[in-house]
Length: 218
Image: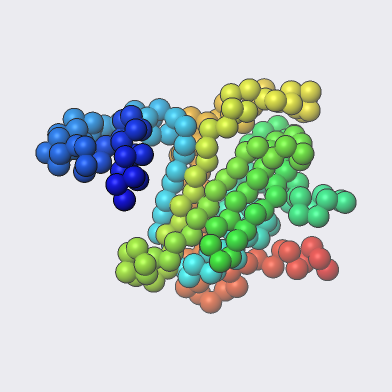
């Protein structure tokens, strides 16, 4: 244990009980706290939203893991279909952009209740735009039935500049990264859609997943 403490002591800047008194910590925390925070401080590098959903965690997972759910809860992604010859890769139209294709691959882990959407505009080889979802049983954190859903996007460098300008459709006047300042309120609209769909179906005994995947397979 002493060796471990000595190794930690070699790292500059650590704030731990062993080297900073409780009173000094409380003072430091109080000085750092603010009554208000700028948008850049809150959403500059990471955009995280959260909500409570009155629907079981497993059902929320099934809904998010179904790529065709994009056509329901997102504002703009439509006409999703699997790319020929590339199992697991899907494409659709993102109507927030003019004549814009979006490509998506879903990475879903049931045991962890995580669903990640790896996506990109215009091409499906470099899926750099990643939407991270974590579903938490509300019974564990809120002591009530249902789910807490956390949704995070990270500010990838490609948001600042289109890495594949030659693939942009003719006439499109903006890049998805231009929308980053609106990611939080824009995704809040979609999160509200997601919550409304899941709670309505759960409350009324309607199948959670739309069945579009089965219809496409037929």
